[in-house]
Image (cartoon, rainbow, N blue to C red; front, side, top):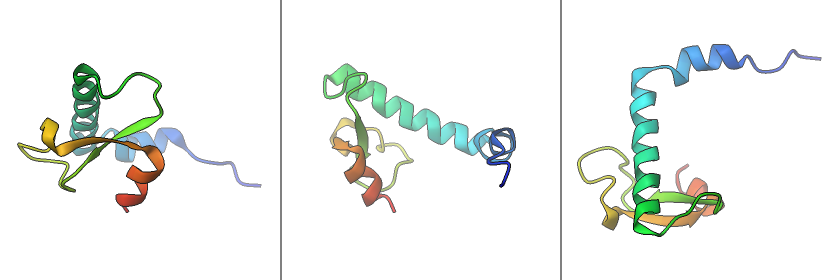
Length: 79
């Protein structure tokens, strides 16, 4: 039987990287924007999707580029 995942190693090699921190901040910012707008609420089980697939850039978190979607729909479209 394997020992399982090494979460410390995953964090150190991936999640701790500067680029990943910026991406996470963009995602969190989009979520906060939709909550402020009233389209999302804590614990609603929805994801914030981007209409244009480019999630980085000046207009990526503009309200006209964001849409609330089910987790299943949003994560299936981002493959």
